[in-house]
Amino acid sequence: MKDFTLALLLSAALSSALPQEIDWDAVEALKPIPTASIPIVSAAAAATTFAINTASAVSAVSSAVLARPSEAIIAARHAKHHVRHAHLAARDNTTSSDNSKCPQKPAADDTPDAFLQIGTFAQTALKASAPAGYSQVYVNKNGSSEFIYPYMGFTTLSSYDTAECSKRCDAISGCQSINIYFERDPSIEPTAGCTNPASSTVIKCVYWGSPVTPDSTTNTGQWRKNFKVLVAGSNGYVNTTHSHPKGYDDLIYLNNSAIIAPPNCRGYETYMGVKIFQNKPFSIDLCASACSASSEYNRAHPDKTGYFQTCQFFNTYILYNETRSVGQYCALYNETWGKEFATNFGQWRNGRRFTLGSSWMVSNSTGDFDKPRGCANGQTCE
Ligand SMILES: *[C@@H]1O[C@H](CO)[C@@H](O)[C@H](O)[C@H]1NC(C)=O
Ligand SMILES: *[C@@H]1O[C@H](CO)[C@@H](O)[C@H](O)[C@H]1NC(C)=O
Ligand SMILES: *[C@@H]1O[C@H](CO)[C@@H](O)[C@H](O)[C@H]1NC(C)=O
Ligand SMILES: *[C@@H]1O[C@H](CO)[C@@H](O)[C@H](O)[C@H]1NC(C)=O
Ligand SMILES: *[C@@H]1O[C@H](CO)[C@@H](O)[C@H](O)[C@H]1NC(C)=O
Ligand SMILES: *[C@@H]1O[C@H](CO)[C@@H](O)[C@H](O)[C@H]1NC(C)=O
Ligand SMILES: *[C@@H]1O[C@H](CO)[C@@H](O)[C@H](O)[C@H]1NC(C)=O
Image (tube, rainbow, N blue to C red):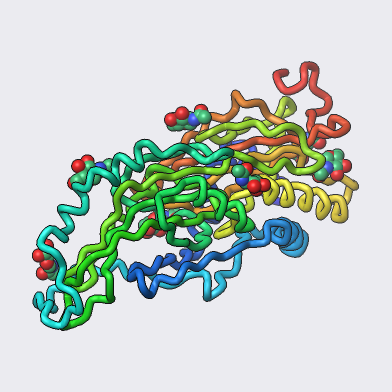
């Protein structure tokens, strides 16, 4: 009976051919991140930014792995001041149009359609250059980025100045990308007696802790009573510098693909499981920290024969549920695999498309502890 169970377990282990595909149990256990709402009324829209100490985020990952080694989810606490629930209001049809109490009547050409036709917004966005150290990922969209995490605040600018926007991002610890755009805002908060006030154009510079993507520009505005908030000339830029974790080899970029490693040359799995960082600035250091901490934990907890696995290689990327970022995925391995095993370009789940981005693989080849043992030709042997 005992042998039978063991055989069954072994065959189950060996037949689960692709254990490193997206870990749906972990992904589906994630709690939704409250959505950030960026204030729109210019007078009330005091700029706010939120810094995140990246060094303490890295050490928090290490502590979490050491304390709960089998737990996949490592989420940042959602500080209350970081997020407000967005109310992307539908048009308030219960309010009939009434501008009798507006302090200033909107001009006849102050309409949503006219705003989107303003050519200077498009021209400005199209000719803006990427700030030094940043790359442009989208240009002249009619929507701003949303569902990129973590949200790190915004400021308004007096001109559409990409360099100024990036400088402000650089000054915010954890900021990795920016979205700059023109926004059609109500000059005052719409009220019952002033349902569609005069507009004012505000130039916003929004800060994000992970890369903005073209697909994330889905926030095309909202209704406030009879006033329509709109976005134009929206450009996105990403800081191209990546931290290099100490003690690890060179970073290798996999773009939108992830590693699916076969069993090693002796038929053993080298995959050690996954950690998912939710609402933390994207950083290769976080995954390196989880990798090193896994080794540290295992070293202190060998099995009865004295054997333990060390983490020598990882693949980390951002997982997207359609256009929305889910979190930073971090898959750990005890042996190094080559770029040719980066064959996972995303998966479908319940009719939704999950894709990957910002994918990197990194190994720790110190002392060749990342190489299979007892194989004739390293990884390629039969
Ligand atoms: C993907 O996003 C949709 C819409 O927000 C949500 O209902 C669903 O639960 C998400 N799926 C996973 C696996 O996170
Ligand atoms: C509200 O008004 C808008 C614009 O007139 C219209 O498109 C929408 O269908 C209305 N919604 C409801 C619930 O009546
Ligand atoms: C980009 O990110 C790096 C690392 O976080 C930071 O040191 C740098 O100031 C940022 N900006 C530029 C222009 O490199
Ligand atoms: C933005 O809106 C304008 C006016 O409706 C339209 O001409 C343009 O194609 C839109 N741009 C995008 C990227 O959708
Ligand atoms: C990453 O992949 C995307 C989608 O296939 C492609 O458009 C883009 O050029 C790639 N980027 C790099 C740096 O290879
Ligand atoms: C790299 O691997 C070696 C061998 O397992 C280990 O001693 C060392 O601590 C690892 N380095 C890091 C930064 O985890
Ligand atoms: C990786 O782990 C597997 C399974 O425990 C083991 O058979 C293999 O020898 C390990 N590889 C290294 C390089 O230690």
